[in-house]
Image (cartoon, rainbow, N blue to C red; front, side):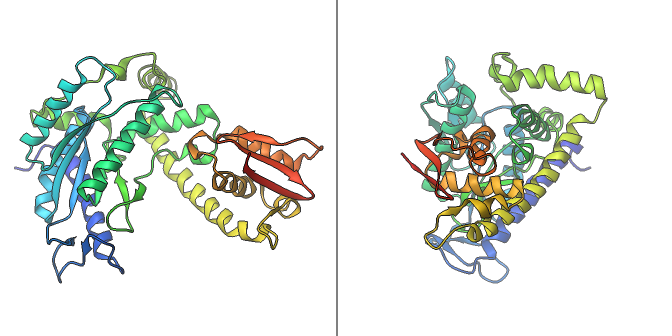
Length: 359
C-alpha cells in the first residue's frame, strides 16, 4: 500500500524540483569554483567529491515541516544531501526555544546539516517586509557558507493567491499580479540555476497540513498568522473567505492560475523592454525622450524602471506611482522640475534627454 495521497503529493512536488536542481547542475558548460561535473550517469557534486546539498527553510509550521519531511525522504534516493535552516526572528518571547525545537525536529528527520540562525529585524518597509528581508539575508548567508545548490521554500498555492490579491490591492501592475515565482533569487553554487525553489505552489495548504498529520509530525502555528494587525493575516482569515462566499469555491485556484498567466506576460514585456532600451539611448548613453514616447506605454515604463534601478534606486522601494511620475516627464511635459525617487535618485528632463542619477 502506498503513502497517503497528501504525502504522495508533497513528495512528488519535491521530487520534481530536485530533478530540476540536478538537471541544472548537470547542464553546466563551465565549472564555477566549488563544483565538478558528474561522471557519466552520476550525480553532480562538489570539488571534494561530496553530493550536492539542498536546504529547506523551515519555520516549524505545517507547510515547511511537510516540505522538510518530503525533502528528507526524496533527496537520498537521488544522491542529494538534505539539510535545514530555521531563522529565529526574535520577535516573540521564547523564539529561541522554538527555533531549538525546530532544529530537533529536522534532526529527527535525518536532515544534516541543520542550523538555527538568529537575526535582528529592522523597521524599513514595515514589520512584515523587514522580517522577510532579514530572513532572506540569513538564508543567503547560510546557503553561501554551506555551499548549497538550492534552498526550498514552503509557500503553497494559498500563499500565492494571497500574494496576487495583495498586489491587486496595491495597484502595482502585472508583475505584482504574477505572485511568487517557482524559482527566484541569486544564482546558487551551480552558477546558473537560481537559489530559491518553491515546490508547493501547486499544492494547497490543507494538503501540507494533512501530510503532517498522517506522518505524526509536530507543527507550530505562528500566532502572527492569525493576528489581525498583519495585512496578510486579515486577508487569509477575512478577505479570501469572503471572496469564496461571494464567488464560490475555486477562487484560490483561479488566483494562482492568474499568477502564472501574468508572469508569462510580464516576462515577455520585460524581455521586450530590455531589447528596446538600447534603441532609445543616444551615443552618450542618455535616454532620448522622443524615442521613449514612441514606445508602447507598458514597454516604456519598464525601460524607465530599469534605468531608475540602475541609477541606485532600491527595487523593493520603487512603486508604480514613482514610475508614473517619471513617465509624465515623457508624456506630459509641462516644464516640471526633477522627480525625487527612493535611494536619493532624481529624474529630470534636460534638452530632450531624460537624466536619471543619484542626487
